[in-house]
Amino acid sequence: MIISINPGILNALAAALLFGIGTPIAKLLLGPIDPWLLAGLLYLGSGLGLMLWRLLRKGNPVHFGKSETRWLAWAILAGGVIAPVLLMWGLSRMSASSVALLLNAEGVLTALLAWFVFRENFDRRIAIGMAMIVVGTVVLTWSRDANFDSALPVLAVLGACLGWAIDNNLTRKVALVEATFIAMVKGLAAGTANVVIAWLLGATLPQASVLMAAGTVGFLCYGLSLVLFVVALRHLGTARTGAYFSTAPFIGALLSIPLLGESLSIQFMVAAVFMAVGVWLHLTEQHHHFHTHKIVEHDHEHMHDDHHPHTHSEAVTGAHTHRHRHGPLRHSHSHYPDAHHRHDHE
Image (cartoon, rainbow, N blue to C red; front, side, top):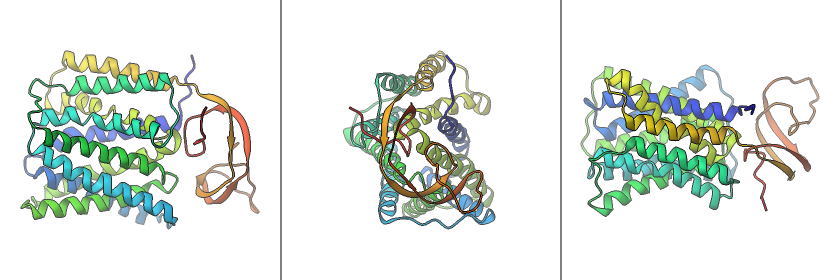
């Protein structure tokens, strides 16, 4: 079988790679920095880095509609403010191994919300693939030290996972907006909120070199990762993007072997098998049928293709951005639940 790689898949896996790289590096920074403050600095580094990136590249101004502003605001509140607070409260009352195990719920909740609340298409193959990836992450993060003696900390961590799952699904609503702008706003908002909370709880700033290191890791491993994640949302939809991104803990564990001197374990290899099967099931997905595109008018970066056959008064080549109108269209081809294929299925 010849596998045609959707660009969204490459973006989602690259996002997981960058985020996975950040995990062992952030662990090295935990010594001189309070955990809550570090989370805020990583987010803030991503936001400030992307703001500088946009200034240097003279990024085009972004105009949000009222509905897009509302979706992004709720996404930031759920995933950038509430979720980190719940996670840190739970982490302060549980072992790190227990929290790591519970964090696997984010991928599951993201998919369940996408499938049953936001009506994103899926079939048995995709569901099994998602399950395989989740089982792999559970195996990878399983520890004999994990314990769940108290219900409230467990509920707090699961609440954080639900917050990020809501964030992922709401961000899809604005995924056609310029990705660096979305990631910049989310980074600045989440970073500022978490740094202020950490300061109010008594955290103190580390030395300048550690601050620079945290900001750089935040920009590369959080900011650019989020940009790639948003681009993947456009092409794949929320559940599939979340599934590929769920491989990030495996990438982090793989990089921990040379960076932190950790050993290659049976647990790691079993997790790798489950994740490989899950990713393969997603990569080999074939979904095609006759479907109807309704009339819609919106503004996003695009190239002229079967879904963008409009003309211009002047010759235009390559990717470009302007407000355009999609007329009614009925055809059949292989597709994902991307920004232009959010139709219902019988």
